[in-house]
Length: 433
Image 1 (cartoon, rainbow, N blue to C red):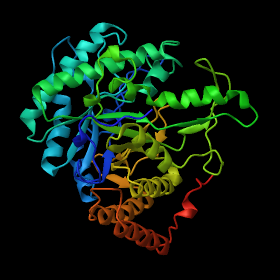
Image 2: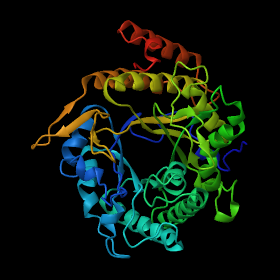
Image 3: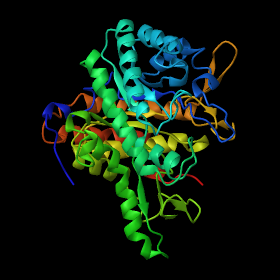
């Protein structure tokens, strides 16, 4: 299925037109409840709220002029219809002081205690809260806001509505929840536009590839159907699926694509239940799909600007994973895909959702008592190397018909420089085991 934007201005043709820097840093901000009833607050757990100014100064020092942040809705609206945005103020002030552009998540897996996510009230509550934040934000900063109304609608609908692994732990209600979240996002966008007409919206969901195991060819139709379900929320927002929800192409602004090492796997379901253990595809496997092809498919369907809203890995493979994603992104851009940027997510190490383990997946670690965070040098070096590549690509005029021959030559020259620097691209395509 393909369609083009009703307004050609919504399609960016080269990166650098939307964000202040090609690379961004994302602060983990999940706020859902665990099965034991504990409310997660990753902003507090990483001490980001306490050391926001130092964190933003670190971003600026390393050329990251864009950040992803999440409001903690349960703190903002502790009483129905009453909004207190003081919990966001440290980040807003730090962003303003450092000239950092922020993409704000309104609902990142968490909401106030008084709301039932399946009830109609949730839709109106998100809209009112979103408008209140946009109005408050416009008084704090002169720049138009970037917002993610609901983070990862497709993933969250599955995890919270079908598999039952995330609060509210429902099963067999995934499509119902997806419709509800799309409806809420649509209402929120209208409400925000009413007070901030220049607001932009990023709709974030994982890019996935699901294949049948060679020993189970009968799974091929179901595996492909599941793979295609990754597009449902975007199809709903644009009005091409479930038009009764009120979707329209004007709502499908920027596509946020999340991509991690585990985003390709063997189909393992019967209905909505797992019948076999999760087994990700290795990049060595012939069925593994290059990320550049996945980006091209997304652009071919929607013709919207793409922002790689989350990517990262853990421990010693962090730098190699960034190298792979950057190489694939360059290949996609060379083919004409309008990638606007790459967000390292998370930018800070954080405690695991369920086991509270120390996840070594960021550029910086936990802070000491003065806010100093140790940097992971291999990832910092890899980031710096690719920043130079994309800065040079950005200097080439690519406004029409894909990338110019000059851009292609420049890309190849830079890749050769990377190889000469001891980090050959081909050697990084396999994650160390």
